[in-house]
Picture 1 (tube, rainbow, N blue to C red):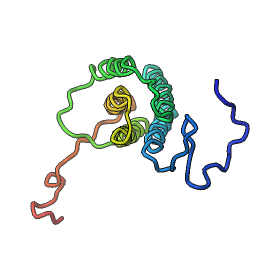
Picture 2 (picture 1 turned 90 degrees about the horizontal axis):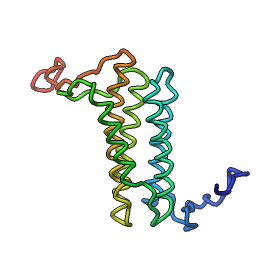
Picture 3 (picture 1 turned 90 degrees about the vertical axis):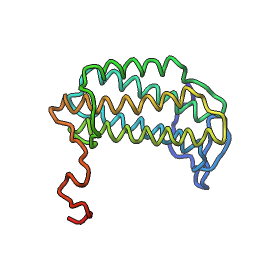
Picture 4 (picture 1 turned 60 degrees about the vertical axis):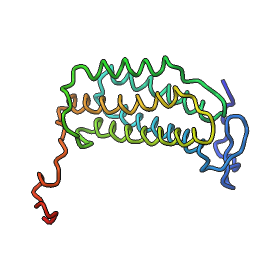
Length: 192
């Protein structure tokens, strides 16, 4: 176990820098900090899903495992040159994705984010995960990045989409299908 925090504030970041896991100081908007910060944000968004009452045990287990993975990923990204995420992490997500997706009806249209509280929270986590993936790709243009970390985030956003579809059914909601503007009562000229 690493250092225990006895004091939460250090004042070391008051000048706009932060310390990486290897002790290097970088600006708080450095691509590496943006990457692991957005992974942390994704983890927090998943915590919101888990806080919704009535989540099924299989989804609870799956997302708790994901939270541990994201903590691993954040640690990896915080230390230049570190690799923690392995192919097995990606394969596990793919297995979860297949298991949750199999009972769902085929998706033939775009759906709007929403449904019940857990489903809507899942969509927020999904879009946050997509941003984390973009941030890690940005980091990869400056420094080497573990290929499995990028694959993991890509699969995770897909899994969160499927879980949102699963949860909307569990919450007895229905998916709202996106309608083109002309189908929502607008004329072809675009005026109401």
